[in-house]
Image 1 (cartoon, rainbow, N blue to C red):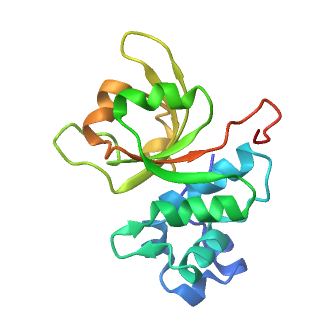
Image 2: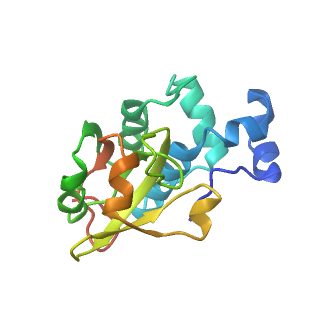
Length: 175
């Protein structure tokens, strides 16, 4: 699992200091940590989160409001994993996860208070039940101890927007 909190040694080794404050950038790196997990799952070159952050800044993927989904999709495609930013209804997430993992836009820790979006997590599969359990990899601190969330808890904080990827075969390659 990749974390969005960038370790000081990684930050220094890969020249993150040129971007400014490590902690501030770590708070905005959830999409890039999720992208790194996708690259690893597909068996592709997976730069560090700091290196991905530098690429994202160079290609104007990051805005004051967060990462552009299309920009993350373009980075994934550049690394050999075909991707698209697209709307997907919450009730369609399970169907999409049958073919490939995806990165979805949710509110951190999946509250049901009406907030939606602002945090990107990797959805990697599901357990089929009346209320499907979605298997996630959340690069935040909360995600270090939470890797399964019922769809009924995801839906209220999900924006309906995701980054989808080419089907994944069992060898980690895209089909």
